[in-house]
Length: 417
Image (cartoon, rainbow, N blue to C red; front, side):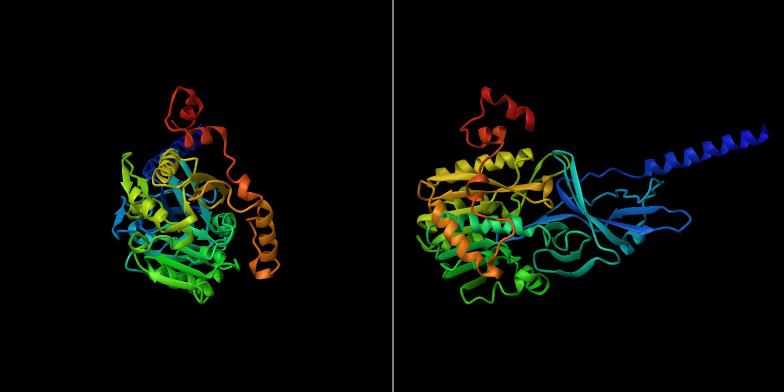
């Protein structure tokens, strides 16, 4: 009886300790910010993993924008990522500082969606620097290759950067019958520029980005960055994108591609945090973009995901804004990219002239001519996406293309409420 009583007491003691340790682990409270998760191993016998967040999440303008200030959110709280079910005790500041990152992840507070990418073994930080505008890192992952991280936010990965960048470039360029002069606003990683250069008709590319540090980093660490700015057709402007567009002459470009960062995020209290790149989504900027395009010019801009309520509202607002400033049509296209929140993002294709633009036959012919050169081949884009990418779920299409929310859209309201 004494032995059984000792076992019971021991069990109660272990349970109490486990409850206490669990209570000390705070919940994740970040609002759509990226977190670098760190871990250190305890002794072999304990088999426990302690986890925390490395640094303070900060959202800033990552492309050419009208302001350079940053919107800093509260420091991320610790999260636990045990390798096996175990007690997790938060690490102290020194342990967090010395820990090696093992994951990078993003929490979308609006929807409660969290995702992360496992980083490489050892120290995965291949390069880090601080520019005048933001922290710049290149980290190695296990399955996604090298990752470009700005202020803790994943910008692209080697594994799936092709989907976003090929669609941003080729959809507008093939839609135009003869694109010769192109403006790229943002996209300091150089991937969009490298795709633009695959088109033989392109004679002149102005590339405008605010942060020369990002450009230099990508030149040194990513394959597409090594030649993008060496092409004599490319004219690089390390400058404010909104100001460049504002000062450009009318009727200057056949195609404009705006590869900008998010215009806003959300704080933990539910309030909207407006980011510097929001200037690139203003009515004034849209009007200037329309003005500097030729009569049959085409604009393609980064337009967020359907699956986050505030983003969906933004898509609808930007489409209405585009038609209000003079674009004949504006359509939202969708693409899949697993490293971005919810695995989906889209673009807004705005055309000065009504109609489909180039014919399907000419697009297919131009595409086949382009990919006949092996280094100009694509891995995600092909001409059928010129139409299929604009086919949306019913609830999304009804909301984006309606002029006002009404009682007939109950299904859309129920989904995003």
